[in-house]
Length: 418
Ligand SMILES: *Cc1c(COP(=O)(O)O)cnc(C)c1O
Image 1 (cartoon, rainbow, N blue to C red):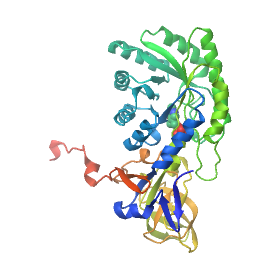
Image 2 (image 1 turned 90 degrees about the horizontal axis):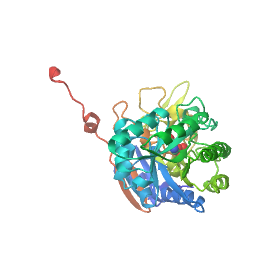
Image 3 (image 1 turned 90 degrees about the vertical axis):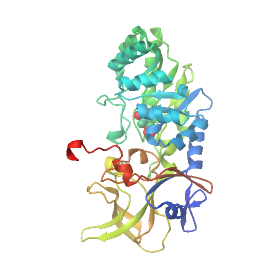
């Protein structure tokens, strides 16, 4: 459920016509609904409310400060995967004690930064990283709280680029090597074992891979207990899918109903790292039709947003629904919706049946709230687009449109070329 809908023929975000924002701000832009963002967190949280849990929003899905602040105020923490994400989370007011830090390539500097800020825990992805954290913590006179990220060898049945829980993926410690790594962790003097972590992939549309992976993890938790290694937190990662087209992913309630019975006697606090499910359908990308180009082979609707603004179709062949900001009664067209970038992979939709737009029309690329703006780049020297938050009838610019000067900020011409 989201708050983008037609009133008459005009697409609205809550009480605001999308076209009104375009008039003020130009196009393209990302547009988020406050009430959708807020409700999605509440629904997810409520699904788990009978059990001690912490929601660590996976901020790589959508990391604008305003949205992080909104979630911080509603009690969420953050799942971060870099020093930059940690910086953002803290700037937005996230409590360090609700921040967990994953990623296979943490640098010494990032580890030290996180230690100094006193985050809840590192989700450690290798024995090498475990030793590095111990070494850095010793030097800093700190004790590092850790969970080991275990790779349970479960097929998430999602796009291969966003599956992370199979044996041949770079993520986590193979489940059969987990015990020996916990034994190592116990020996390291500046490491405190507090949890176990897994995250098997993104855009999962079934419950069973979550259940299978958790069952494997729980067996491990018992084995660890038998060795005297206590686990306080079980972190089941993120990955719950959303509806882009015709998927029917489990509702958070259904998800919780499958998970909670498995952990209820564990005595552990649950950590959840939802990303896409909270923000995916809370944001859209608004773009303008520049040209309608017809060749003998194909029709192209050329718009002013490209793969640098929203890369999911290019990167994953992902489907994003595209609808007009103002409905027309006219005929339809089957076309590729493409951007201005000089790449054949620059498309938002392929062979899509659309209501026939006219040049200058606005179109909304739906479900663009997750992995949309955060994956945007300046490729082709295109300034990144603004982000806007609507709350009721109020419009807030939460990130300015970049300008040409932003594009060259930090670049320097060496003396000898002057
Ligand atoms: C990306 C990621 C998430 C969030 O995944 P979603 O599919 O957006 O819910 C959670 N945990 C980790 C470790 C991740 O890398």
